Image 1 (cartoon, rainbow, N blue to C red):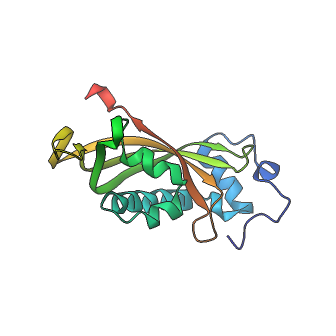
Image 2: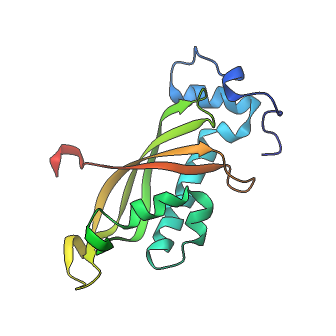
Length: 172
């Protein structure tokens, strides 16, 4: 953060539109602003996934620090009447993080990543404790796409700003 672009200089001002890949673009930007380093972005994703898992069991503070507040609701409660359903994720392991887009024209700049995860994942009815989908005991693989915005505090400059649950590859 200390080596970020100076005030008044936007990431789009130093963006190399000729970069052949998103990762090359990020690495080029990282020369001027280390926050764009793909490894820094991946670390932010891994930290946010850990905080998400922690929020499942009640302590939302870490995730609230690393993500837009409205996202906690979106990640924990699938659409249902009266918030009766809850998505539970236990011990998620990030198996892959792929930088898929970088938007330096956005204000703030955004990075979109597709991630592979493994862990226990199920939907539970909070009133009956019945499992609606998934398994309380089986480890499953699932994918997601998160967009991070460069609008966080110095200790967490990349904050999760949008989430999308991706369908399983191959339909299953």
